[in-house]
Amino acid sequence: MSIPYHRWPDDLAQRSDNLAAVLQRRGLKNGDTVLVQLSNVADFYVTVFALFKLGGASVYVLFSH
Image: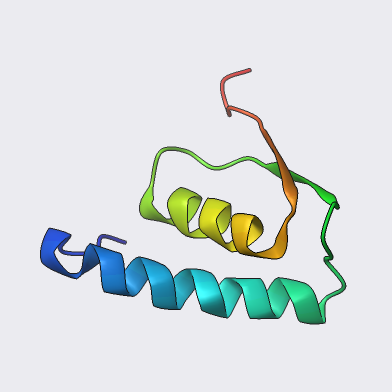
């Protein structure tokens, strides 16, 4: 998936809001620790910003490690 550069800020905000809502409905709350294992793709940034919005603590893991 790729997001055209000129649409990135709006799409990032909307997609991260949507993901944050889904994660919250599934029980994620402020202070929870979340393992994030994504390569350097747009979904990584959507996920990170969604976790920031919820107050989740992100732990990043690279595929190659």
